[in-house]
Image (cartoon, rainbow, N blue to C red; front, side, top):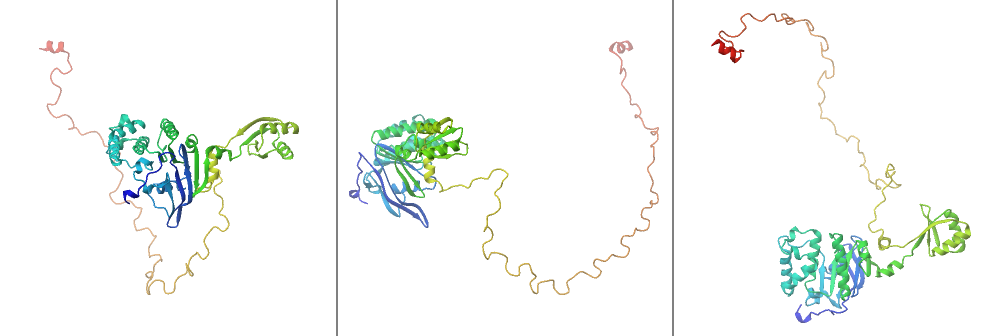
Length: 417
């Protein structure tokens, strides 16, 4: 593509937009007719279970994977037509592609030269992500969290108005996650557009303003986080003296929708604590306590994406998995071939093959004791009971004895001299 055909996205108010995006790998549809937008000045969470198509979507948005149908634009311009993409979009899809023998500052200087920014910018972004103290260390010795920070610094080199980050909190410690949250919020407040994919729902709930939820490659929900919360009815958990009687009283008065939980509490939807207290007092039911339960993002997320990769429940200990269900077994027509286990015609030992004559019959004399068996052999007898006194010539050799003065004290030896 010639330079004259390239365009620049609108720097202020740069939207990320996806239109009818579809990607099929053979018979597998990874993304199906997906469409959403990420507005500027906010952080948009791109949520979905593992395998939902999040990374495939991000790669199609950045021109790394060609979509089957549909497309994506950055500030109204397809990514492939942007003249200086590093100055328009900063993206982190993989933090493991750093050269292990290259220092952090060396890595950034190479990318700075590639996109046409001065080396001073490399030092700026390194300090921005908190790695200025390890500028000369090789990336091969970095932890996963440090690699994530260095990858983010690389994305910030061109000072882009848009950030696309795939699982940016992966590998960060609590302090790093807190820093990332504050950094991205400040980035959005300056007018930047942030799109992050994640399955760490508790972290996303504290960070994002808007959410895009997909499951099986299709859009499930798009909107603000507050709208998502309010779309799910909160319920009031009531502990009372007679849950059954209170349920009947609420139904008679048409107050809320009550269900008795396994723990004996009453879950009531669509009403207030005051209305429940009034009905309970009229019915003569004593209320010991009430607590409002607000659904969090994780509960909403699981309800929207449940079933994609649901695991079977584990049976209680000792019960096992039970007998096989009806119909479980060999498919129709499956089994041994006809005649299996029966001798085939002509199959057997060759003619004349068999045991020799007399095989299996007792041989003459077999089992009878041999002559002389059990009788003592000539010259064999028990050993002598005693060995007798030692021989007289046994003793020390001639001249063998202690030296002169052996066993005497020094005074006795001098007296003898």
